[in-house]
Amino acid sequence: MNPIRRFLQAIRSLLTGGAPLCDKCKYDYGNVCTRPERPNARSCPDYRRK
Image (tube, rainbow, N blue to C red; front, side):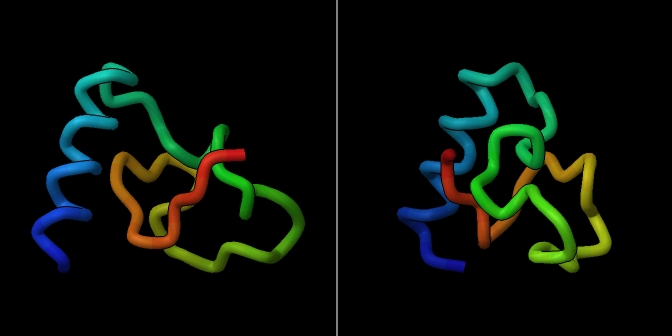
């Protein structure tokens, strides 16, 4: 994983208190996201804010 992306995910985790990302991800609808961590992912390389 890219070091900058890893750093940004760490900052995001600190700011959200480690809350699951899926509720706030633009891919959280239907069968778009097929990651096994869903719906409780704490980190995700595909995460994009809604």
